[in-house]
Amino acid sequence: MKAKVAVATVSGKAYFFIVNKLKEKNISFISLIPGEAVPAEVSVVLTTAKEKHRINHEKVLVYDADTEPDMLADEVKKLLQGKEAYEKIVIGVDPGEVFGLAVIADGKVNETENCFSTSEVMTKIKGIIKTVDFSSTEVTIKVGSGVPAYKELMELLDAALPLETVLEVVSEAGTTRSFKENKRSRSIKDIASAIRIAGRAGHVYPRRKNIESNS
Image 1 (cartoon, one colour):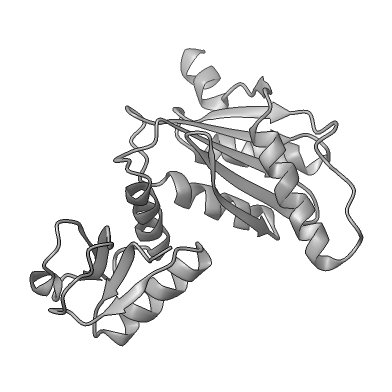
Image 2: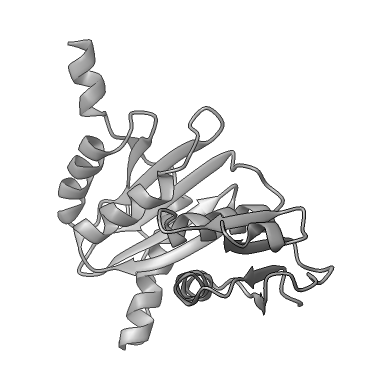
């Protein structure tokens, strides 16, 4: 399939950050020079503010020093799916020595990742929901209860995330399937468990902020 994303910039720094993030998110792209004709199959062009005026295309996203590459890549994904915003985002987390993480947007697996500490999980989740408009998008974070570490994670999520974010504790019974023991298979197992956790109904975790505000 031909790339639907084009990166059009002569800024080496911007190109480096944009391209690395697109590759990380498995988004195929082509490279253009600002002012060059944009192929018909391209749906969105990424460039810098200084070069935007040289891009002849109806959908242009601008990267600058204050724009996080993660946010830019997430916006690209939404546009490629023909959405201005997701109706529902579910983030599944499989806690353990390695934390599997899966993002399900409107029923589709949008992103998966392995994290190696609670702080990395927190940073990742806060980055995912940073630009969410809660008036149009419902966000639920589901955390597996298979190891005691889930309790600490739930407390941190409760303290750090907006009250509009729904937190659920999900039983992990049956979410882990056997894989041959090697590094790659273990990482796949953690992600697969996170996807299954995201798809399960859990018990709503009572938000401490809500309790405190009503007391």
